[in-house]
Length: 128
Image (cartoon, rainbow, N blue to C red; front, side):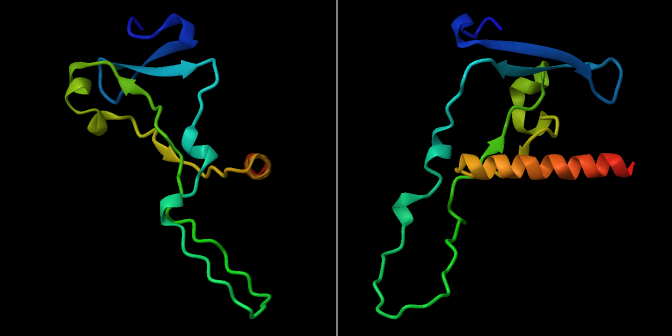
């Protein structure tokens, strides 16, 4: 917490956890202010755009855009252990909180996806 700026609107939470005793101490950083994800505003890789060929043949079959090279958002703010092992290799000690989520550049599409996920979760909850 000493390394964080107070004006950044950040706070750190700690928790105890682990599979063995004594438990390990984990921390997670939270922000209260807006963090801009610059890649989400321009998800395409504009350096690899295909050359447009004009065709006089009109067809109703529209090809979907290949989104393989587009930016994919990965949530990388998992619970991190506070210990000597953490400073050696952070990748091996992370608590499996890293998840890749669908992040569409359109705000309307993101809202529709969230509503769909809520409905699915509600149906699963009611089945229990």
